[in-house]
Structures are given as structure tokens and as C-alpha cells.
Image (tube, rainbow, N blue to C red; front, side, top):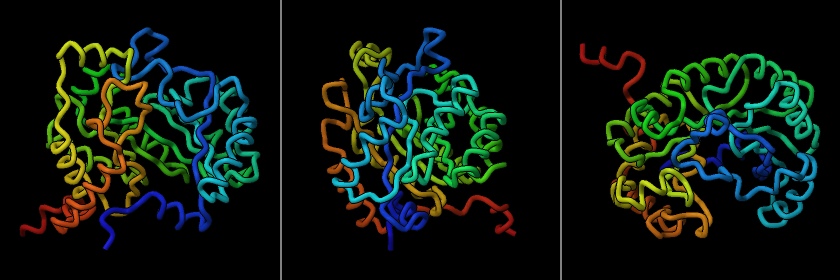
Length: 311
């Protein structure tokens, strides 16, 4: 029995051949940053540390990345991953040009667009639908939710609440696009009940993929200042693993799991993964789940009028 539905299996089922993401870095920003108040955990360079500089064109980034990825990972097909900052936060015509440039690449089978729930609008989705049809490539929208606890979202200055996430998912669901939701399972002030409710909401809204992050503290951020001044506490590793396993137990087993732990270069982090390599944490998680004989979806029995079973 599989402990959880791996993203690699999801891609294999969808595309048959080995498929790998190529991060694309654009010269853009996000709504919070133009107002001078970024998310407290967001670093100046965002999350695009694996990408080429945004001075490279989309085509140049794809051409430069593909040979290395083909050699290292044996990839035959590619996902153009517009990763850093908010990739729908630009004029519609410019957005269309960027996405079209990636879709024209014959090796690209999917465009993945990372954005905020409050930056999803129907005219942008219509453009994506036309590009998908014209160039025969799939569209995936990655939404940074982090938690369903809107009090926590406000504290970390996300700039949106839960309603915006629900609205974005319902808009995207009108199209044949897949959805990936990002969550952070150990944000300070969140408790296990928030972890469970996040899994439930994501499952009820039928997201396709979940990318989980363990909270890291990037240097030169608002959160880093709070961490170094003792204003916030990060839970112990054992607590995070408990939250992670519980989240998986409540999550719909048909949702693919892309990531369980964050990754950030050591030089850029004041704290990351309790000083332990992510793959060691993964091994420990798997061992715990095997020992407990638990698995993704074990507690997935709360939808479809579940209380009627008490009759």
C-alpha cells in the first residue's frame, strides 16, 4: 500500500514519460511589495533561487535548462513553471506574451503558474484557455493559501483571507485546469485543528496537488527579525511531523503530494528544517507512517453528508 500519492506518480500517470519542472523567473513583483508591506516570511528575491536571472527571456531560460535536466533526471517532457512572486500580477497582454512564449516550446506539456488567490480573474483564465487550446499544453494554477486560518493569514500579512482562495478555486474550476495548493503546516499561532481544517477545505474544493512547506526563516525578512528577537517560536521537529502525518490522514487520497518539506539554500536561511536534510526528514516521516500503519486519506470520511450515517 502506498503511504501517500506521490507527485511523480501523478505526472507519470498523466504524461507517461519522465516529466520535470523548469522554473521560469520573470521581472515581476506582487501586490504586497508595491505597497511596501511584503508577507512577513517572503525574502527580497522571493522563492526563485533555482531559476535563471529574470534578465533571460522565457525562451532562453527553457533552452538553458533543458539539457541539464534531461541529463540529470532523464526528463523527456517539461513543465514551464512560472514560479517566483505573483505571476498573474501584470497587464494581461504582457502575461499572454510570457505564457505563449513557453507554450510554443515543443517539449513543454504543461504551463504551471504560481500566483496569489486574490490575483486570479476570469479574463486571465480565458487567455490561458486559448493558449492551452492553440498549443495543446495543459495549464496548472498554483495558489499560495498557506492556511485556512484567516487570523494567521492577517498576522503574516498575506493580504488575502480564506474567501479569496475559495473564489479563485471556483473560478479556475470552470476551466480544464489543474490546481496546486501551497500550505505551511507550522505557522506560529496555528494549531492542529487548523492543520486538519486546511486538509478538509482543500479536499472539499477538490484541488489536484498539494505542496507542503515546513516554515523556514529567510534572512532579511520581517519574520527573521521577529525570530531573532524571540517574538515567535517555531514548533519542534516532532510536532511538525505529527502535523504532517495528520494532514495527510485527513486529505483526499486522490490529491497528489508534491512536497513535504521546504528547501532553501543554507546561506539564505536563519532557520530551515531544524538543521536536518529534507530527505532525512522524509525518511523519518515514512518510517513513522509505516510503524503506525497509517496513510493518506485514512480519516477522509467527513464529506458527502457524513453525519447522515448516524441515522
